Image 1 (cartoon, helix red, strand yellow):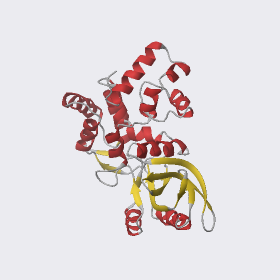
Image 2 (cartoon, helix red, strand yellow):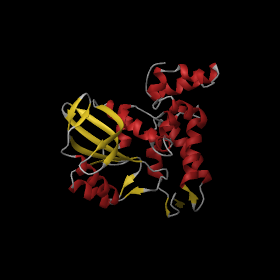
Image 3 (cartoon, rainbow, N blue to C red):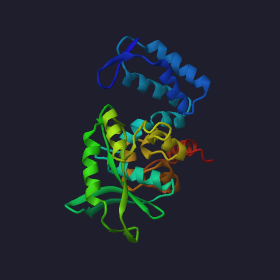
Image 4 (tube, rainbow, N blue to C red):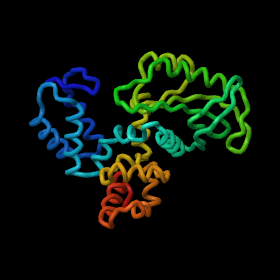
Length: 277
């Protein structure tokens, strides 16, 4: 059985990959078997992977909204667009949970020109910069031109003193973070140039997906009990993550949710973050 990818390419249907994604959502073996059974009945030659994904998502919701939310994680991160402003905020929060101090959206004067820096990190006396490459299309990869360009910006900023984090520091490391993937050449060049990369699936074992799951810091856009408009309203209030929403749950009432919907939304949020509700 062949399926049609987002790019239009025909590939063999990978049943084990789908089962792995379902298990990573937290679904138990019974739920995985039932979802796979229903999907098997609706498969046909050339079916779009997008249709399979949507079907699996809807079926998972019958078992648990939190499982469906985890399964929907990549699309939820993609929903932090369209320009990626909220993606940068989300990445800052992710590094904060790893013990970094962060600052976002700065304009710094390099040796030659000024540069807009998405995120600055500080751990002890070491300051790093992060450039975020956000893609609204799931199939778009960051190619070698991305690290080539960012390396030149890093070199223009490196070696200068900047008044950040209430003192003077120099930027000594550069990260490139994307919600999608890097090409092989991009990874080779970045590795050779001592640039740190983070993408949806790289580096293996410590990728963006791995970091999100380990920290249980899910974007508010993954919640299945909210509409897109309601999610947008929360993002505008700097409620970027589900944990932010749990701490400031009064905003659910402020954006117009009924008591019953607030209860359902918080139930999903607490299950998603494995917090007793």
